[in-house]
Length: 292
Ligand code: GLU
Image 1 (cartoon, protein in one colour):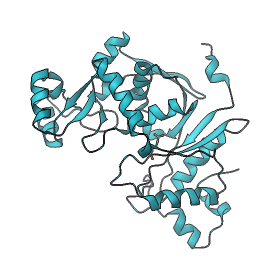
Image 2: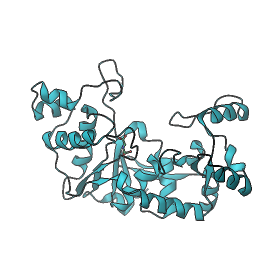
Image 3: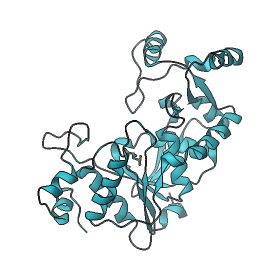
Image 4: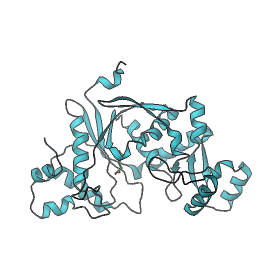
């Protein structure tokens, strides 16, 4: 099979897109340098702050992240996008999909989803990223009932009708190109009707990340391999919105001595703490497995 022209370039536009919900740790440094390295040879390396979750994200984490990244020796393009400032753009995308009849309001609580899923399936079904498969309860509501619930002030999320979207595209599966691997077939249907706008935030990770990668002209999306499967949903959104298709590259996750993923929640040692303990940028890069 021949490699499509868009895979043959080597001046990639890449980005590092942290969510500032805690201090940066070594996994972030490894991910940031992975993206930066692919933008060598005349590409561009962008930084984007994914701070739509205004409850969990903090301004201090953003400032510290920028400072830590610069301290470790990273340089990025001047403009740093913040997703929290881009809500009207995400709304436009939602409106486009709504006009195509591809999104619907979902009033279910987590408990509703668990109960309906147990009733709908003989065994619990999960999506590739481990969430409970949504059984489509609210997809079946008629317009009058939707209007009644919205008028009554019931909170709702917006879900993508994935089957309808695939039917519209005339295909049950899509594909993406992984750098060094070639075309990979993916099945958005395995995710069920994903949430595109949360009840508490009028947007979602899938919506914002694909919107912004397209808007910023990112040609190579790099991320941890634990996010490989969600590429199926991102490809679906790109096809529906006629956004350009990027190439993908996935990096292995850094794990702790017990083989567990480093995470802010579990108190992985922060870059800040390493700096305060007297480590040099070079030592921190080395601990993250980064070679310049
Ligand atoms: N903001 C996401 C995170 O911090 C990563 C963005 C992406 O998927 O590339 O997990």
